[in-house]
Image (cartoon, rainbow, N blue to C red):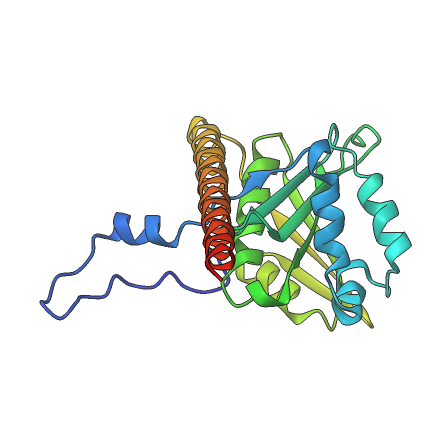
Length: 236
């Protein structure tokens, strides 16, 4: 369920071609489940969006106060919130998979609604499509058979992600709705999600250790600079 076809492994100058499995691993983007402790990061991410992006994400030009209220009101027990972090552990893309709060109505498909936002500096790298793929897998493994998308008709990137995933999209004036039927869960889908969750956690911890190491090195360099400046001053 990607918005662009997977690139074919390309040979290097020696004619060697990377195996398909290795290419898929190189294209993999870790998606991490977010929890209550991430509310501040979520709010910071959404507050970083410009007026136009806020309008496309929420369907109205959300103010700072409205965004903060949205972040504070996220129900992590019921819904699933997903994120992609960069090397600095900044939340550069996030998705909200909202499940219906009331019991599912008998005879109607079990549905979950998908919403996504990506910072301008991180666009063009399929992060939105990657979050959609992961959200679909998560919903599928929880007995949801339909993923629902509600977006402004001018939100071309969101609608493109839905269409390329196979969703049926209907336009009604300024708004559009999409439905993607999900296959039933399987042992493979549950194992796949468990592996992704584990690998994403390892990736996050690795980035955290790198950041701590970088901070330590910067601290040492700063102390050395201070001692060097003090030594020069003493000689003068």
